[in-house]
Amino acid sequence: MSTQEQSAPRRPEGAGPWSDPMGRIGARAGQTLLIAAVAVGIIWVLLRVSVVVLAALVALILASAVAPLVRWLVGKGWSHLLATLTAFLGIVVVVGGVVTGVVLAVINEWDSLVSSATEGWQRLQDWVTSGPLPVDATVIDDAMQQVTDFATSGNFASGLASSTLTGISAATSFLTGLVLMVVVLFFLLKDGWKFTNFSLRWFQGGTRAKLAESIDRSSEVLGGYVRGTATVALVDAVLIGIALAVLGVPLALPLAVIIFIGAFIPIVGATATGIMAALVALVTNGLTTALIVTAVVILVNQIEGNLLQPVVMGRTLSLHAMIVLLALTIGTIVGGIFGAILAVPYTAVAWTLIQVWTDRYQAGEDPVLGPDPLDAKDRAAAKATTAQRLRYWRISRQRPSSQDLGAAQKVESESQDASGVAETSSPTDTAGSTEAPRSTES
Image 1: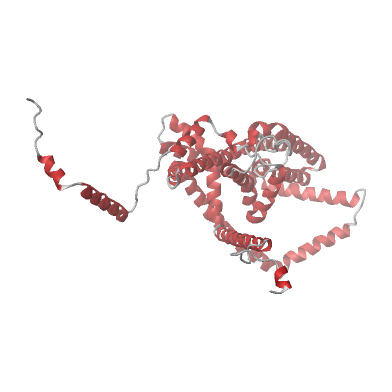
Image 2: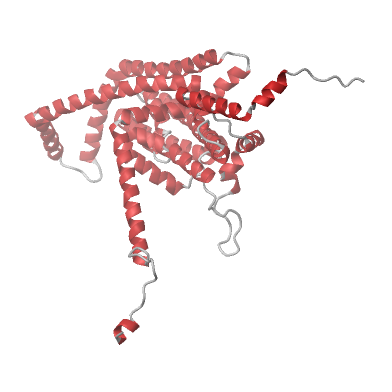
């Protein structure tokens, strides 16, 4: 044996090329790429059926918000179907009334809005040309002429036609999703407990208990978010809408509805809709009114952030502001306006599920790391009632009682039971069973 062969390190017996550090890193990288490919495939499929996904998500969040009302009515002696119909029709009446009011307000004030906008544009143009930094009127006229030429060109006409077809397709998809959402919402309110019961029966022991806790915590997060946000949004819309009506700003009701909807987008929604109201006031009523509207919007936002949100929302979300911004951005990119509305509550649901299913997080004070960044009141375990904890404990201790659903399996099990009984019975036992018992009397 040469000296070079003696000095070369020996590889342990049975060690393969993937046992060294680089091999383990490569294996993990391959697993990560495979998981990423599966995730991308799932996302691609969901995007292909985005209408169905959005309808189901919206119906689920609305059902979570209205379900306590249905349970309250059932507790008062109502039938489950009647309670469901009452809550469902209540939602339809409220939404239909708001939409009808907005449409009628736009129709009634459209002529006034057009004339006010024309006058406001003229005043704005005069202010620009005679302000502290005057702009030549010919520059504005040339810009307006270029816009007019582009609007009357063939390219714009063809693009407008294409946009019209796209808009018709989007409107069809929206109506389809709306109808589907209404149907799913009705069945979730009516048979939601059946879906939960059906899902839990596929699991046993601790897995079933964790799944039951996940359903309860998710429903509480979604329902609490919708109810709390709707309360805060209603206060914002009422206060700003009253200010717009008092100041004589056209379309005060539609603007108030837009502010109400925008409040469901955290952080940026109320600000963006407030800026829109201020711009309408600027164009229609002038700079002074726009400044007053801006001041009212800022005041209402301060009341919302410092008073309404902590009192009404409480610790429903338990998310850091940075996580909210990231979820909002990703949701907007993926799903547009609906993604922006649904991203934050479902991110809170995901964080809740992580807390329920993981046991790796080391809560409490740490001698080296210091205090726990996660407040004890924000943990999922802290939001379970005593009755719920008892229910989870009973579920985890429940003995399995599964039965075959298929007829073939049932026949096979019955035949096995019958053969087992036949094997354990003997002829002497059978004969002995026919004998009369002997008398013990003397």
